[in-house]
Image (cartoon, rainbow, N blue to C red; front, side, top):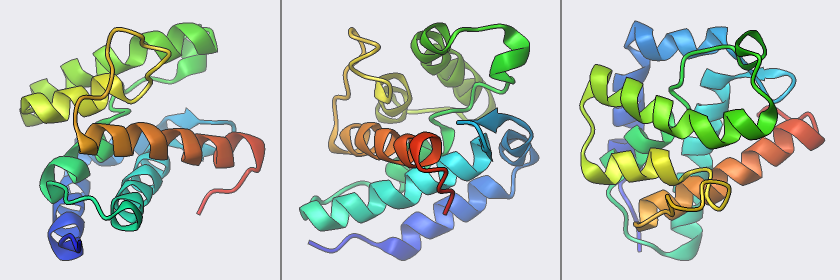
Length: 151
């Protein structure tokens, strides 16, 4: 099954035109990258995984959910949050910010709320797109934290 990469890429480009999204580059993440680079990598990996699994996805929903999944807009260290506290609380903050700034549908909200599952036990991913972002986020975060690889 082939998904429309051009539609996916166009939605990402549209989001990246917004200065509020570009502002994510100002927040460090995973020890050596920034939040904007991280979410772009998660988005690309999510699409690759959908293709590898042969899953038909909603390209626009996947792009928006992946790019906005860490739209919490703060520096973790400046907030004084432990990794656990940040891990459990930032999806709700990201949903609130993204819905306020971009208006989310229920699938996009679940992508953001569910991306830290199972850490956020009561917010599991409930769509293919949410599962893809959850898996891609863990894979990309591991590359960033353990292997210091920031494609």
